[in-house]
Image 1 (cartoon, one colour):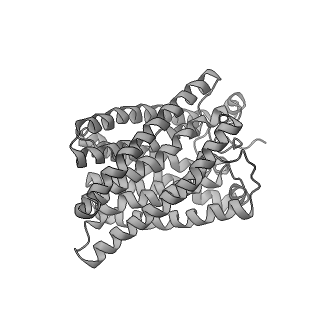
Image 2: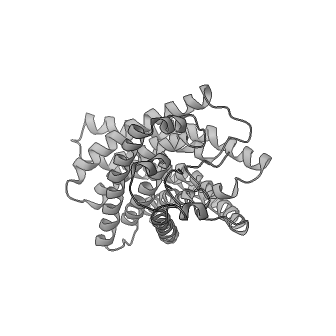
Image 3: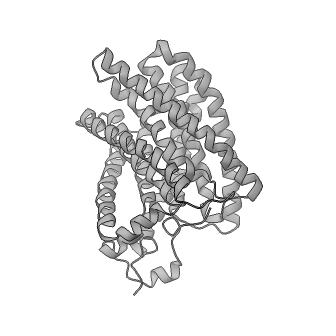
Amino acid sequence: MTASASLVPDDPRAARARPAALAGPGRLRALGPNWYASVMGTAIVAGAGAALPARPPRPVLEAVWTLAAVILVVLLAARAGHWLRHRDQARAHLDDPAVVPFYGCLSMALLAVGGTALSLRVPAAVGIDTVLWAAGTAVGLVATVAVPYLMITRHTLGPDSAGPVWLLPVVAPMVSAALGPPLAGHLPAGGARLTMLLGCFALFGMSLLATLLILPLVFSRLVHHGPLPVPMTPLMCLVLGPLGQSVTALGNLADAAPGTFGAASVLYGVPVIGFALLWFALSAALVVRAVRHGMGFSMTWWAFTFPVGTCVTGAAALARHTDVAAFGWLATGLYAVLVAAWLAAAVRTAGGLFSGVLLPAPRR
């Protein structure tokens, strides 16, 4: 898998030599769909915190959610400007197999902000979540079909092309499946609520089976062709996303319909969280290796946030349904990792924007 310019900044020395204005049509040219990962990573800090057995202070979580919502609005406007002013580059992203999977991030950004609004019960939370869940689910379903279609019909891929980013479009329905059940609880009991819950279960199956198709390709690529390029190593954490989110989805379905999903959420969740911890350890070892080989900051660092956050919510769901304190401690420990990763990614992203390393002005 090649490193795309949308993911890894160009030469920092050259970037610092250019003007570093924070706004301007020219800088939008470099704005790819991967930037929605910053919304996902910020929203999950608030959403995962709300799921912990011992919650952080509510005002802190609300402030983080507000930041995520503001970033989402800014990025939606900026990406619209990108398509209007730099349509050639936007079309080129669709033809770039390293970039196009990140279109799944738009869906998950919408869903994460909406779902966290509901979990924190912010003003108008049900209305906000209804709109964002519907929009995010629709976008996610389109991406789940469109991205594999482009990979099959328009992209030239080799045996070493498979990578964790291939999971991004197909994990979006799992996020819908995880965040739909709490919203379904606001529907009248009966057919409408049952339909939504069964729809979420169908989304769960859709994403899970697609993930099971892709994961062997990812592991085969790693063992036969070696580690990912050093700047892309954080993307190893993306595999945690469908794992943690699927445990969260069944846990939330069990909250909504305990008689139907209660036992299944535990029987599925415990072994999957076990595998997630195995992958977490493997990813951490490869990240340490990459740091020793000179890994610097890039937007791929946001892969340290949302996927880890899904493991927090998954472990918290197991804590609720088993009353086993160890799962609560696991969720709390992973949340500490999430917060540290978010702070690192957020601070470095802000610094990159101000310095001009990220979203550099076009060369003249």
